[in-house]
Length: 349
Image 1 (cartoon, rainbow, N blue to C red):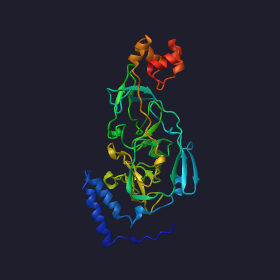
Image 2 (cartoon, rainbow, N blue to C red; image 1 turned 90 degrees about the vertical axis):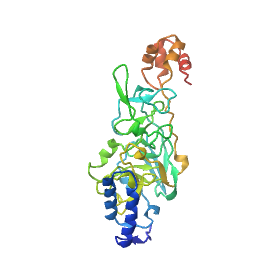
Image 3 (cartoon, helix red, strand yellow; image 1 turned 30 degrees about the horizontal axis):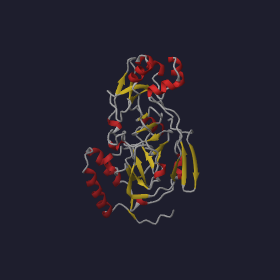
Image 4 (cartoon, rainbow, N blue to C red; image 1 turned 135 degrees about the vertical axis):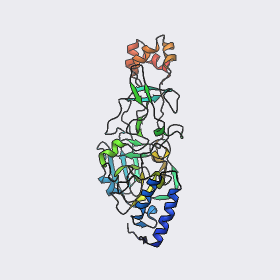
């Protein structure tokens, strides 16, 4: 696309604009050192009027990203189809802390230890290759909001209530066998217990470590459903981008290794608050591509189910092998009952 915008180089007008930006940045609660980094980065970077509104074809950059080969990617005119299976190409925890039945936002008193339930999903996202910037944002809902190069999916910062930040509400649970499990793993992700849909709520260091150097710039680690690219925490100079420099959607227009002249993109700043993930889209997004958050579900009331079956809770728990969803035929055979009886006791369809 021909670029007809008028550029403003560093001069009196640019300094005036930079000063305004700096004052806005400093009005936040972020630490002044980070804010100074943001300001100095701005002063060393050529800025273009209307850059954020520019429509740029990102196909070439997307093709150079380090996508997990299990992701099926199909390019067509103006759109790219991504079909990841949701299983990341990095290690996951062997066990996770998952919510009890009926619990929306768990803590250590309302969760139990489950063997990693992650399993392949069926995803298909049609994402624009030339995203269109919009001054009106679209809220990023619970559920899939982006595809990461690892093959897993990105969620917004929140848990099922839409207000509790997952990254700041992490906890561990230890079961009677002495197994300790975390709610969120070291990669800023976890699976849903029923569907096994693994997803991130923040910057996954297991992903950035594969494509970035510790003190170097961040590279592409994903793409949001509106078509804008997702990067890790560092700017082009390898300095951490403070969350105060990002817009309400975690977006910023600045240079990246793939776009040295600058491009609008999202940043996962490695924080543990509401800025940990994308909260809204600044690009036009097809709402049909947004898949709702899978039901976190949780463990059924084993005590009540065991009572119905005339066995102990420990016997039922052992037969289920602490898996969710259970292997109903195998568990029923172990207990010497029919699968229908077991399902009825657990309230399972």
